[in-house]
Amino acid sequence: MFSSDHHIRVRYIETDQMGVVYHGHYFQYFESARAESIRQLGLTYSDMEKMGVIMPVIEVQCRYLRPARYDDLLTITVILKELPVHHKIEFSQEVYNEARELLATGRVVLYFMEAGTMKRTNMPEALRVKLQPYFTHKS
Image (cartoon, rainbow, N blue to C red):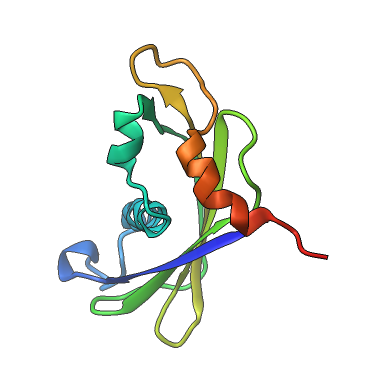
C-alpha cells in the first residue's frame, strides 16, 4: 500500500458565508494531494504527459463528516490500496484537521490514456517501477 500526506491551509476565499470550506474545494485539495504524492515518488503529471500518457478523472466521490474552516491546517492523505494492473488507478483520500479529526473521505478514479488517441492504456512503466516496492509483501 502506498500512502502520502500533503498539507494545505484553508484560505478565506475557500469558505462560504458560514465560514466553512465550500464542498467543491475538497476536489481541488484531492487533486493537489494526488499530484504531490506522485511528485514524492519522483515523477510528475508533466513527466507522464511527456511519455504520451494523460490521466483524466473518470469518477469522484466525497463524504463530508465535519467542517473545515478558514485557516485550518489540513492534512490530505492519499492512499493507493492496490497496484494498478491495467488502465485504471484508484485513490482513496482522507482529510484531517490539526486535531487529527477526520473531516472528509474521498475516492477518485483515473484512467491512463494515450494523449494522442484518448484510448485507454496501461500504467507507464516508470510509475510502476516507483510504486512496486510499496506492494511487495514480505513474509
